[in-house]
Image 1 (cartoon, helix red, strand yellow):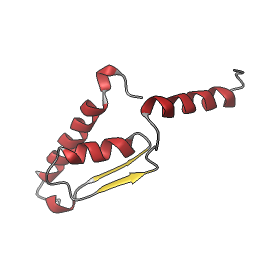
Image 2: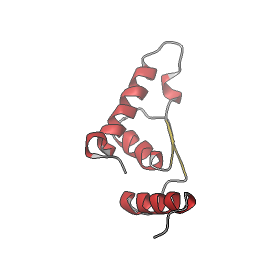
Image 3: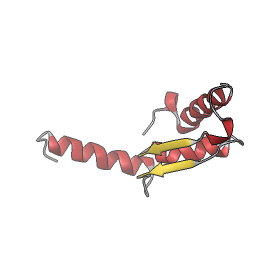
Length: 87
């Protein structure tokens, strides 16, 4: 899960700032820009879109159905096991 310096709201605002920057470019149709994210990005995309009124779409690929701590516990435990660590 993101640390306190890089919290979900902070990361979502970074994404929203990127969307606004793209919308300001004349070579991109501002009505066709949105968010696509997977894993933790599956949480960040909807969060960023909720604070960005002109978001055209949100695609959440494999967004987790559990909380961030549970997701990271699962990841870390499996990663350590794949490296040969025992409980």
